[in-house]
Length: 305
Image 1 (cartoon, rainbow, N blue to C red):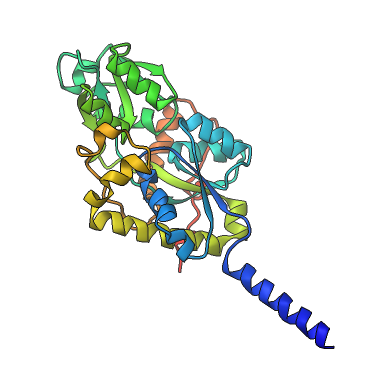
Image 2 (cartoon, rainbow, N blue to C red; image 1 turned 90 degrees about the vertical axis):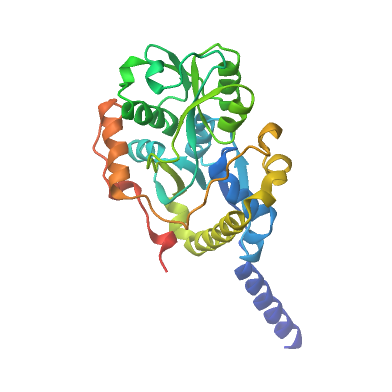
């Protein structure tokens, strides 16, 4: 009886330990950009650990590589965009938008480019990643300046570092880049033509699979609590993170002093009109052959109390 009692106590202790931290990490796909910075800080500064959750950040260097990992089931979630969310829904991959992310995208012209206004890009070659938030941002920015999408040439360059090098070398007239490569390109001589800071483009999002939302919802809520704490800490003293950008987040060294930090918001879902604008753009481009609704791609459970 004494031995049996000891085994029972040990079993209860093991169950209790399993309840404090998940055996399997949440695997999150990230790109080396501004949207991902709070996730890196949450990992490196122990915010995930404080919430008793293990998170593995898996870095990709193009949306195509990231999306292939999602389709293969190699990650549970991803820093992504509304366009990818719509594509996944249409293809039957049950990935759900759980919140916005905060980033900055812009158009940088080659150092030799003549004329700063966006109108000067008519007839020019712009390097970008096709069918992603980058192309959507370019079309939106140019449209506001009266330049339609058929008035410039889209050059598909999926890998962002290569895209930056090509615009700096004058192989393309301009490149659409996220931060921190946008700032890096400008520091190295590119001409900043426009960015999304004040345009109201809210298409960057976090995705999780419905399977993970169904089975590990409490873990995802812990994940968001850790993310919010990291974001608040960055917002409170962004300059304290300048060295971190280079040493831990792998941002280019030349942007350390010049980088303008994003102000990260409390986790929230994208507005319905933002989703509808993205869907309208996809239909206009004939990139979606079936009707997708806001409800098809949104899941609000992770942010509910």
